[in-house]
Length: 499
Ligand code: MSP
Image (cartoon, rainbow, N blue to C red; front, side, top):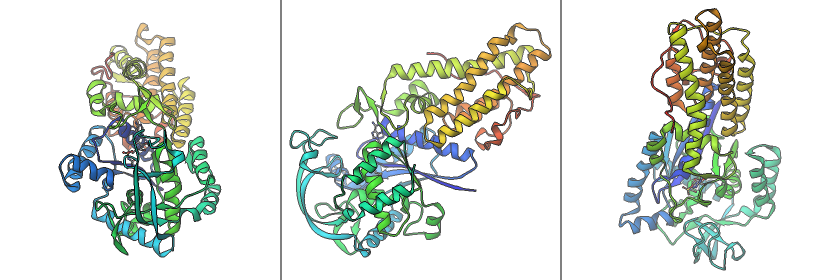
């Protein structure tokens, strides 16, 4: 069985989870579920980024110690992911002991390799980004290009990671691993950063305490990004369980476009320095904008994903997030868009198909689902849907994968409209058409289950199928003819009442 280790970014705990965090996490969850369907041994990791100045300041503002503060916020992420039906296998907090020992080991490995050295840093720093900026990167002289708020001037003795030495090694590594970053235009952005020249970056701070001390010089704590990136290896045993580490690493990262530099430049260089293989891949997403702006506490346009579940239902929300925006590009979140997607794809297409099929089977087939025909006109559409859905998930393009699966739903609705079994009298002709439609729905339940798992389980049960849809394995479970016939089909209430 092949191993598939997938990660999301670990989220800053300066505020509670918002739609932007949910976006990346839902994409990760669907991808993890898809790979489980393929029979791979999946390890899906998410977590929280809890050190650094931004968190220390947020804690101070709340009148708490950083530890108390992060202990209060981190569970909000865990709870939100539970409510969003996120199937993560692990949740790492960077304040955990397993992480601290791994970070110390990684720092020491880079230091021993001669790639971390002491120097003095003077420069302008954005606390919200936890990043230094050069003058030409700033807006109007002193505004952070991301947060559009004033940067602060810092001068301190820092240890530096000698990133400038890694340009050739990184370019060579990427040349040897084409397609490691998807989509391709995001790979070009990363390569552009490397070709543009690499500056050493500071990996320690003396101006704050809230972090992991450098093992050879505890006056300094590790720079929060060095600390955070290491979560991807410390969570699977780096520094605490070598065998486990080698089982899972190298992993695959889902990231947002704003953290390409850290993940696609700093991180592989840190790993190469420490003698560790770089990641197996990166999939870079755009932002979900609200009113054309990135959602953030700083901009005051935060949408709470849990409110949206209350409004449109869990799977309605998950489906929207996955289907609406081509992964890699920015998308604009709107309530109108959410409702329109829900009505067209879920209520009118999937919901309507199930309800029609169950009604006709109830009336014309005595409630017992007939078996499909081997030479059904829908078999070809099914084979195409399987191939296209598989290709699209492989390329981390959930919106295309769902469109390919929904093609099957549309084809089945059209097939029913052409045959009008509801007008025919009971008999072999109706049975044949309904067997085909039931088989199509069975396949759709399997193929759509990574995106809308609860709904697909309900469809599975209403078709009378035993067990769990997420225990099905592809491609076998999507080969035409799997619906056995002779099962009791249940109508039930509408899956997605129209809005
Ligand atoms: N803590 C760092 C990541 C460290 S990973 C080793 C961080 N945290 S974050 O909470 O600010 O953002 C985490 C991820 O969420 C980023 O990939 C970011 O792009 C994504 N999003 C935050 N807001 C977003 C939107 N509005 N839309 C989509 N994703 C966005 O950066």
